[in-house]
Each structure stands twice: as C-alpha cells, then as structure tokens.
Length: 257
Image (cartoon, rainbow, N blue to C red; front, side, top):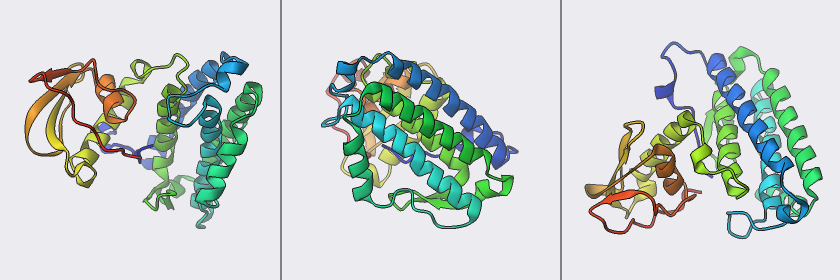
C-alpha cells in the first residue's frame, strides 16, 4: 500500500479539517458499501482462492481490510485522547492476525468487515473538531494529521477491493480518488522512490493531468485514462493498454509498498 494523504489541490482553501474529514468519511462509507456488496457475492470456494496479491488469498485481503479498520480506530482514539496509541501492537501481531483470520468462512469475513467498519465510523464520530489536527503515526513511522485518516482508509478499501479480483476493477475507481492517487504516486516516483527510474511523461487523457516520473528528460510519453495510469503506477496493471510514444516497452516500476 501507499501512504495516501489528503490532497490540498482537491479541497477549497477555506475548508476546515473537520469538513474535509467529514467529506472523506462519506466517501469511505460509499466505498465500503460497494466492497460489502462484492464480498456478499463471493462463494465459499472463491473466498479461499488466490487474490491479485502474490501469496495472499481473498481471505487474507478481507482480514487485512478488517484489521486495518481497527488499526485506524487506534489512531483516531489516540488523536481524541492525546495519547500515542500504536496503529498495531507490532508488525508480528499484524501479520499473525492476518494469517489466522484468512481461512475463515466468507460469512465470518463479511460480518467482521461490517463490524470493523462500524467501529471505525464510531471512533471518527467521537473526535472533537480540534482533534482532527492532532498528529498520529503510521506503522511505517510517517507522522500525519488525523484529518488524513479517512483518506487512508478510502485508499485501503479502493485498492484492496480491486485486489480481491472479484469483479471490481480500476475502471470502477471514483475519478477523484484516481486523480488524487495519480498525483501522489507520480510525485513519489519523481523523488527518491523513483531513483534509477528513467524519466517518463504521463498524460491522463480524460482529466488533463500531467506528471513526470523518474529522473532526467523524458524520452517516453505514456497516455491513457487516469484510472489506467493509476492502475499501472500502483502495481494493479502491467500497463498493456496504455499508449506509448515512442512505442517502446514500459519501464519496471519500483514497489511503493
């Protein structure tokens, strides 16, 4: 996963942190509704089958999504109480919970997703307006304001809904989500994360977004819908449908994990 953030370019300059958080929470609600609908249609055998993530079944993805919601509850509670509550007790505990929860029947996975989503919403509702500015710490060590938590949850739901490989594809991503994430991943790959990557110009034909990743002067231009470009940047596509000028192969992107 990437370290998603709230993009100020999509918010009015006068928007308050509570209002930004409220809008993002509404987006999380809608994305989760669609996720739950997909999961409700997954059969028992399909739930145990492979996901689009190497080494993970769909059960791994579903368990991860539920435990991620609970981990963000920890950050919300920390922001509300002014205490440093770790997102996860430890990396080992996180990994163990995912492995132990992955084999559960799909009806248990669905109930867990619903319950963890409800806990996330309840914890967000308890935050007083001033607490959205409180700093919290991602498990990677990145520090960010609590107002970014809803976007981070949205990114988890949208990316991993695709990773389920159960009919929801990058083409289903909301345009604003795809646009913000395109900007952020491109910015990452224009910096240290893209060290050693040849410069590539990216053009989103449907939103007029432009970006350059890698270092140097671009010798390759890659064009397509913003959702298709994001799918490639985020590792959800090999980029085969993207237009290239000249018609050479796409560079191998580094993992953004």
